[in-house]
Image 1 (cartoon, rainbow, N blue to C red):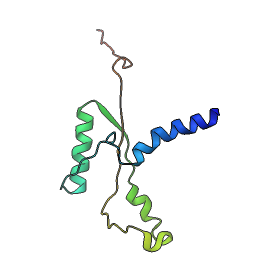
Image 2: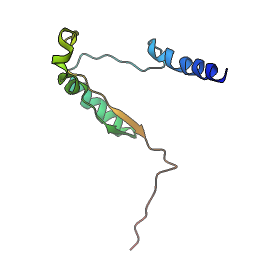
Image 3: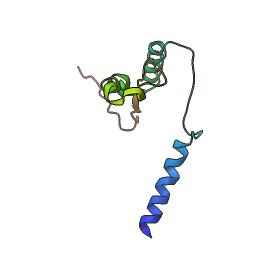
Length: 100
C-alpha cells in the first residue's frame, strides 16, 4: 500500500510536466539560436542566477547519427542546447570584509 501511494505521488508530480503544464515556463522568439542563447545566459547571470552546466545536446546526438539513421534530426533542428542554472541563497552566502 505504501508503495502504491508513493507511485501515485510521483505520477502526480511527473504527469503535469509531461503534459505541457503551465508550471513550465516557455517562450518563443524569432532569433538566431546563438543570439537567444547568449541573451538568456546574460539575463540569468545578471539577475542572480548562476549557470552551472551548459550541455550541447546537438553535439552529443550528432555522434549517434549513424546509429539513429532516418530517425536522426527529423525536425531539422540547427542547434539543441541547454542551460542548467541555480541561485545562491543570500543567507548562505559568505561575506568577507577587508582589514588593513
